[in-house]
Length: 156
Image (cartoon, rainbow, N blue to C red; front, side, top):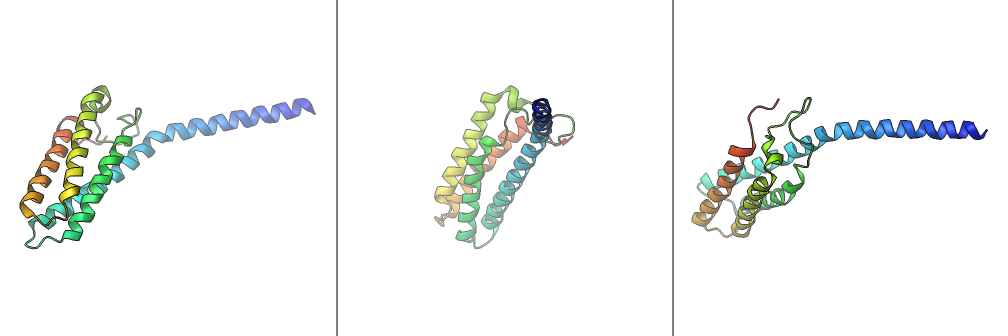
């Protein structure tokens, strides 16, 4: 009886280990999916901002809500690029390996984006069109600067 119990426990241990290994193997794809979703939401919020600023009568509520989304994304972005979530076979991502090989530079780019996102969120509901346009431009420049170095259009 005792040996049968040990065999059963050993079998459970092996099964649990196999399950855990499978979950860990799937993790990079899940991380990338979360990252892509977050970046798409960020892009949509920034598009809303630009559309409003180009309209004749920007709606303060749209600017304020979009600015909050951008600010929240700027806070969340720090968790979107953990080690092991870069380009690899079977995982489609536009993230370049430089994100991890030049981590300090990437962190600086993230910090710059977060600073501009916070500044934009603070003035979003001000109604000051010139200030909003200037801050939206500065915010967009931080996105472009990061994309030039750390993003590729090749998603293979």
